[in-house]
Image (cartoon, rainbow over all chains, first blue to last red; front, side, top):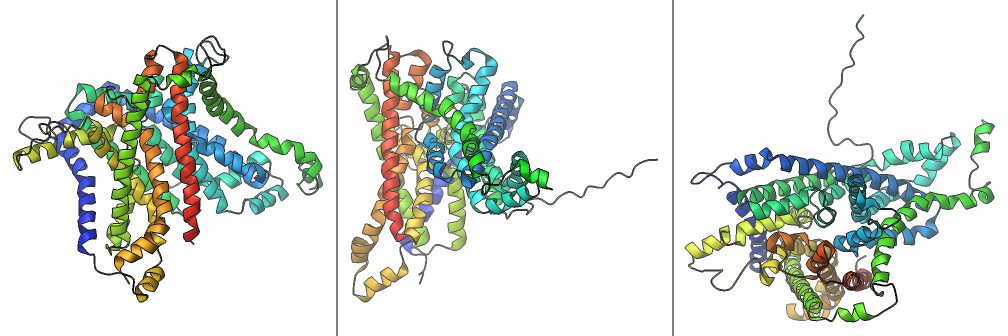
Length: 274
Length: 297
């Protein structure tokens, strides 16, 4: 039987709640004080008026999106194929996909910079384009543990062997099976992996900074050195964004296949004009 | 449609023909991992045992004991231990309060969800939030000064120092601990407690003889996970202290930027040391977790 909420546990919980919320409140309050003697959202306005901010956020959103797409293309077929035909390889694939948890990003990018530097066989860091590719690849590696786990859990929930046999018996090609049967069935899992990837990559600092990319993470660090109130505004906005991403992820993670998260806006077909 | 079936033999009948091709499906993943994860890391590992001319040597690994590098490792390890210890205790107390202390279900659920967010809220924004809280002009610093007459910075505290960083890390360590220890705390069955009480055990005896032995492997494992988590933290430190606080990731960062150690191969050894510490703590975490899972059925 569960007793009353006793005095000791209550104190601990209150202390934890204070610890969690005071920094958020402090950042919020601080962010409102940009104009002397009055509370205003001036710091937020100032952030959004900065062209560099817009560019940095856009750059990071694009890099994260590219990492999500590349990661899904890499992980979904592999997880599918390993489950279906290569179960012996499963422990190895799982081990590799968890490796990035042991390798800190700063170590990973160190190796990549040396490996793909100007004197290597594949000198990616010598061009802007190549460096961007390397950044996206770094993000794919960083998010691999989360993406693989999400997708693999998603596949455990559906009977891929039966789905595959049914599709094969109707003459579908491998490519078609993965894109039109497997992928839609684990879409929810992929999306939840995607949100996590996004929240990791958007403000990522080490890789972006060492590759000299104009990304959001390095921008924030620079802003923290130059300004007082804008960083607090950024902290609030980025906490809100993380919250939204996690909420969306949770919503998708608890969704059954086929269930819609949002209501579809009824779409009327235009009647053909004569 | 016999023609369609002929082109795509099923595994049962075409086992011989498909055998070789099955492997191709895993090639993209392995190629990617080898090229962009395993090879770059191996490059560092091999480089750690090479002279600049390419010969084999142990000098770089011995070089890790040089004053600057050893001090950096020692600082990293102390900071990670301190932050993991505080995080473990705080998270365990909170988990105990929420699960066994009779907290309302809505509160428990809300804090678990919040923890999912907070454990991901690391990096630069976290540093900014703490500057607004405990910085020189932070809210708590000012309240302590104006209301309680306590000059935090006058008494030797600084957010931009060892303990300041440890308090900041707690913001993602405590939620992480709460998330990973909850299954273990929930695994303490009420029957065990009832059995102990019916045999006349006191609260202290129950915890000493039943609760603690069951929880210990989980708690130790989670402690190691938190330790590894703190060890790899870079962005929070940079945003708080610039690059003056030379934990290993910072030193590595500076080495990549500008070869501050004046020896590229020593930099590789620095990275290898970090990989080794991370591997050992994660490996022990996995072993301890397996041990702990015996009780969670």
